[in-house]
Length: 401
Image (cartoon, rainbow, N blue to C red; front, top):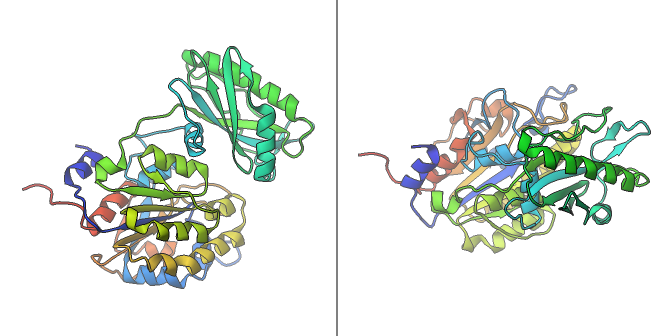
């Protein structure tokens, strides 16, 4: 019996409510000037009070030493082993913008990027162009037919877009064109298995046409593709945990992931206050709330230590409104670490706090990496967050005789 089957056998409905607050890329590393991480630097009296009255620890998203992607991180937090349940970024983004993926479709995530006169990538995100510009550029690329395959190009947010390939004989087993570094040329897409040869050929022809079309569109004069994938089939959270789960997230990828595990999706504005207001307005209708905050990760990826501190402090100031809803269980954590000093995801464990009436408070009085390392929960796999949440919400029956 695996962990999801165990949860399904033990789960019982109850009126108690759980809030899972995910600060994307929360974990950090010490800055060179202060020797403190972003979370340790931030002024967080409300998070600290939650930690003081709750219990804390560190979680490994995949396993020690493994750097997780965002999909793997969130799947782990929802209780799905990222080694067993996998999904490509393209399908995630497509579902997130409500694109109806059909059987046989292959979706890829795209970045508008900047290249110099020699074709070298100088900015993988094209300066995070405005949403309106992204929409305009997507219209230029949309509607191609290549090798009897129709291509759909849709905007996501800022520099991000999706391209969906629809035709016969497609296979997602191809490599990315994104070199994942500056000063390199975009890569050719290659087939990783014989069945994907046609998909690779179409993708490369699309990249060539996009380069020609965008040549005068500085800073977004080229595109990068990654995460070729099909829509997977995951068991639904509602069936596993006997919950009515809902997601409140601004970025399409996280909405898409939540939809794939069976959550309902609520629309809100783009600010943190909008997200929290949406939760309060719908609090009576659900018993599990996934609330996602993206700004911590974006700041970390940009290498902006101070901005990441400010995002954490903004969340802390808004936290009393969330606490006032009176959840039976509240968990605050991240889906991975994104230290500003590394400008990207990292393998470092992520701090987690659990607050409920039934927890055993530890001696930790600060929500930060070094403090949580001595917390009562210890260091444990992220897939165990949901069982802990369910137990503290009194939603699990006894195991065994």
